[in-house]
Image 1 (cartoon, helix red, strand yellow):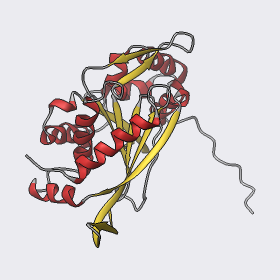
Image 2 (spheres, one colour; image 1 turned 90 degrees about the vertical axis):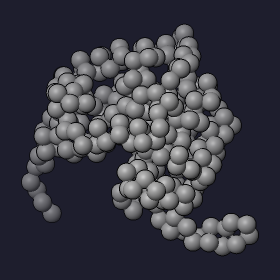
Image 3 (cartoon, helix red, strand yellow; image 1 turned 180 degrees about the horizontal axis):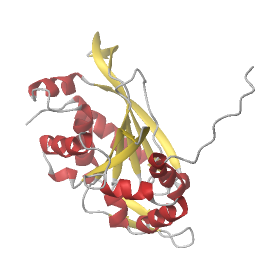
Image 4 (cartoon, helix red, strand yellow; image 1 turned 30 degrees about the vertical axis):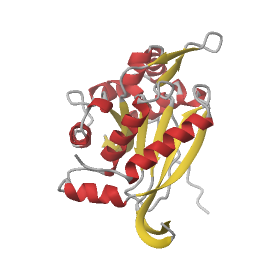
Length: 256
């Protein structure tokens, strides 16, 4: 048994964004989770038809944005304290997408936002995602605000984050009307994300599975789609309807 003392170091700057997110809002959200299995046959065909340009994340972002746009309650955000809660209904559907990055040797997750995704084509959504996917986390690119937040002392970062979250429009710009997290690059079935907004979708690994169509057993690509929702804003019936409609759009996808 080793008697060596553990190495103790300050929280890395790259981890400050996640720390601020958790302590500035996500831990106060009343999370409830739903999940559904999605037949990805049409999505795989859409990727082939696009010449490999489209990712499963961009397809989900577009499908979910179109569905959420049709539900004012689902594109609402809670603001104000516990003594005076208010609901702000947003016109646009901004989508927060999470990216796995390495900053100063430290692996971390950072977020980019696809603005007004309901008005974009899926190819435009993909182009927006690619800007973030290919960019370093520095002071001059699309992650400039993330880098600035990482450099702030934790108490100041937390105060700045909470101040921004007090305004629904700024909150949507930072955290999205909903968020999308994917663990599809690993053999992991599902992820249940923490959220500071009203909705958050999670994508698991796509793998061949048996399913029944028209009474016949088939082998088809399938993945688990999860939905986290803030129970203070919407109830399970509406959240289930949103998830079911997103599932339907993904399973009946047509690339225009």
